[in-house]
Length: 328
Ligand code: UT7
Image 1 (cartoon, helix red, strand yellow):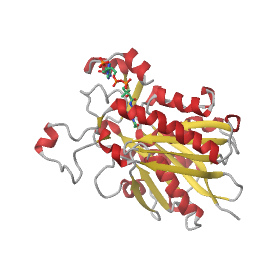
Image 2 (tube, rainbow, N blue to C red; image 1 turned 90 degrees about the vertical axis):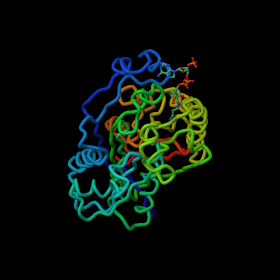
Image 3 (cartoon, rainbow, N blue to C red; image 1 turned 30 degrees about the vertical axis):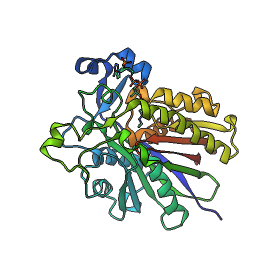
Image 4 (cartoon, helix red, strand yellow; image 1 turned 180 degrees about the vertical axis):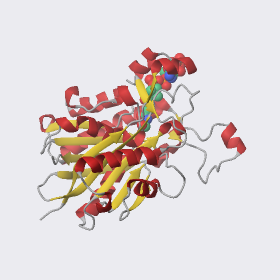
């Protein structure tokens, strides 16, 4: 009997502090109207506590999920944390999260594919379940984007926020779960959206700090042009590969980078906006957390057997889609 990896639970965490467009208007040359029209963001959450970072948010989401599912952390075998803002260069944030939540029997690692980290982690995790070697895997997307955003830059400060979302993957034999996945990468676009400093190419130095090399650098327009095409392409590809019509699709769960990119994807798929999970207005782009954050918010509307298409686009460039038949 074929084993699929089923999503059997989801939970999310967002920090309390709300950074709204009016506050950003005070620090950079922008307007609420420009931000809402060009990106669809009204506010984002910021983790203000200097002693807390991505592992904290990941652990909050994971604990909420385990409590909801009434599962002991000791039963978790593997934790994959999708993040571009790990607490440290090493050790892996996943190890810190395991310790925070008491997952003493788990091993874990971080996975970084920019905004596509979460879907890349889900695809990876599903293989451990399908192989039959693991029965309970936590995949957590967590990013403290405020730690790498230059709040004097109007091009990026308007977009990003902090959050975490977690899903539990377990084996299923009822033909629900992760049915198909297709991930892509094109490294020739590396410098159109990247953080130049802090890696082996440009280790931290006085100069790198003074020149703001440890922040996100983005050529927004070229990223937008690529994203709008590639996210729609892969969404359409997932439908064609799986013989799905727009009517068959219950929900589209897209990475929340820009409202206009999401609308273009829905449009290409032929699905109406009432089937699109979109909360970018409340949280902005939370990088690895956007998709689980949507799933958590829409969890009550999802039904067993629903066809859900998850799509992503991010730095790299990276993009991809996952087709899930919802399991509960
Ligand atoms: O998740 C990872 C992937 N990331 C993305 O997918 C982000 C993709 N890019 C975008 O979403 C959009 O490119 C942005 C939202 C970043 C920018 O929107 P845009 O429509 O591409 O704006 P633009 O960069 O073409 O700028 C248009 C104008 C420019 O003024 P001029 O040259 O026409 O006079 C900018 O200087 O808007 C100006 N501008 C702003 N004005 C007010 C740029 N940023 C702002 C701002 N407030 N924050």
